Length: 259
Image (tube, rainbow, N blue to C red; front, side, top):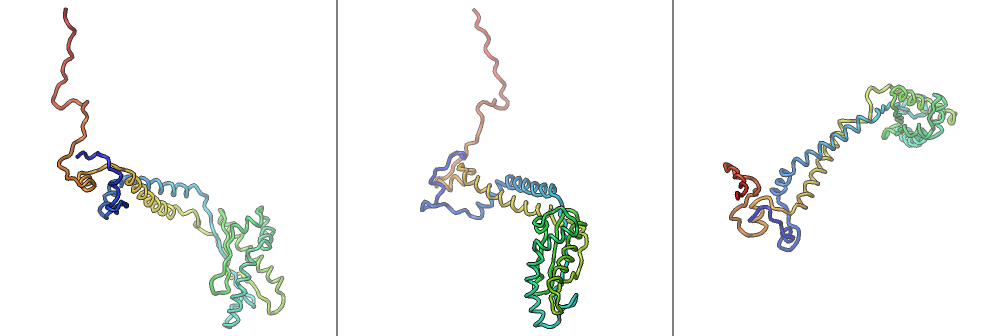
C-alpha cells in the first residue's frame, strides 16, 4: 500500500465516529516531526520581545516614605491609637494622590507637565497595616524622578499641616527621602525575552498540532496499517521516471534518412 495514499474522512474518527484520542507516543512523534517549526516560532518570538524592549526608553523610579502620626516624626506606640491612625492613613493615601498636591509640586519645581501627567507617573500606596505611605515617581531622568518624589512628600506634608493646625492634629512627615536610582525599572529585556520564549514555544506547539490535524497523508506503513486495518505487505518508493538509470548511457539520436 503506498505511503502517500490519502486518508478517508472516517479514518480520523474512532469506532463511534468521534475524534480519535492521541496517545503519548503520538504526541511525542508529532513534536519530534515538527520540532523545527516550534523552534523557529520560539526564536522569532524571543527576538521580537528582546528587540522591542531594547527600543523602549529606560524609565527610573524613585520612592519616599511618609509617616502619618499625631506627633511630628514620632511613631505611635499605643495599640488602639495606632489602629486608628492606620485607618486615617488610608484616607491620607488617597489625598496624596490628588490634583491639589500635583499642582503644588508643579509650582514648586516650575515643571511644564500638567497635573494629570504628573499623577500618571506617580504611585501612592499604604504599606499594609502600618502608618507609612510610599510615594513613587517614574521618569526617564533618574535625578528628576528623585526630585519630584521628594518635593511631593514636602508639599503633601505642608498641606496636611495647614488643614490640621490644632495640637492633636494628624501629621505627615517625610521619613525617608528618595535617592536617584541606578538601574531602570523598565524595560526588562531578560524578563521580556523569557516571556517571549515561553509564549513562542506555546504558539509553536499549537501550530504544530494544527498542521498535524490538517495533514491528511500517512507518514509510515505502520500508520497506514493501523488506520486502514489492512496489513501492509510492501512500500512503493517514490521515483522520477524522467531520470536516467545509473550506469546507463544515453542512446544516440537516429541520424537523417538517406535517400
